[in-house]
Length: 152
Image (tube, rainbow, N blue to C red):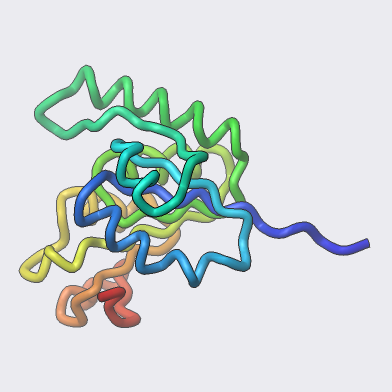
């Protein structure tokens, strides 16, 4: 009996976070990939029709953050991924948290735009994700942050 492919939930907000996730798309081809984003139009532009939509949120919108957290739990419960990977922002962190709660391995890839310091979600992901990656070598001085190159 052959083992089925592992399921990966790949999550990113629209804009630059999504573009960086799409640069990883070919790397994820060996997996059964499910996508989630805050903007379904960016997924359709890349030929991805089956996408879960998460409410956009941030620290300044606590009610939206709660709604996004609940939506993230629903998405993770539906797909039961083995791995959750996100390039940001807050909705991706919500899926990282939901993935951890449901036993998935998790990886956060902080945006290349954050060259001076980790993003706020990146700083949180150091403690919440199994793997926190920076695209800047000098930001990986923290033992909870790794650098393996840039996706750009």
